[in-house]
Length: 334
Figure 1 (cartoon, helix red, strand yellow):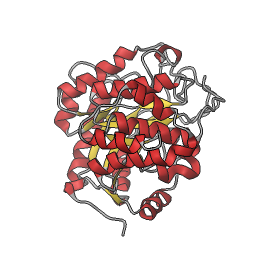
Figure 2 (figure 1 turned 135 degrees about the horizontal axis):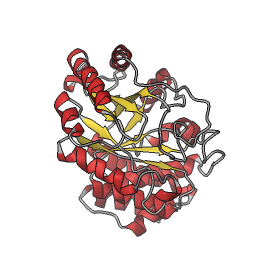
Figure 3 (figure 1 turned 120 degrees about the horizontal axis):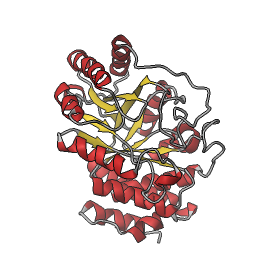
Figure 4 (figure 1 turned 180 degrees about the horizontal axis):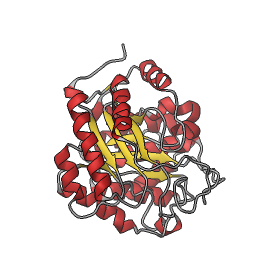
């Protein structure tokens, strides 16, 4: 088994698609073999991305006030978490966030809004901001606004939105244990809709929501079938006041195995360590970037992230460089 991950990585680099059995074995890897597994994942990551890291930043443009009942979310209708609630931020606030992203060498600026899906008025508001961001900063824009209505994806594409995020979150089998106000197919269909109009699809998962290892394998293969260009891997940060309050099923070593799984199953895709990175990977955060090639910098939706200076220091210590998308420039951390 110890040489298996290196050999398997070489096969994956040549086009081999791993089986579900092999994927499950990745999650079952003994801790003593974790560094060998990471080395295998790194060989794949290096083949496609070298030592570059893509940086992303979230702007939570609308908080709370959501009618959905997602069990992990502090903004949902079933949450009692004491979060800040507000309607869509004004354009100037969104532009200030973009300016901050530009100053931090962020490649992708993510405009996120809570809710089942946006109204046409909200889409117009986002479009107005996107046009100015493109003109002033040239940032790559990812929108995450929920389930889109007819014609909204086309308008976002025309305005310059590069990527649209809509996470599967969990496996199809486990979905009803997490939310019942929308279906798993609603999520898949939204991703397919943005793909049809030429927007790059971003879709990921939340690991640690009382799912099985088999569920995690299903998630990785579902995203492979969906052909998501960018895959954010979130690790549950259980928030008091949500139905998943008190859930603590993860440890840093298992989180690393999950990241390796997603790299082996989706070798050429952007794998992003996302929400819950700091509280679940803890001191092992740097090791995650030997499998993943992207992170969020700054805060998440309703939880705090690591200071951006510490993220930049971490990348510098690893010898990695920032893949800065603006005008196809690349900035280093030297």
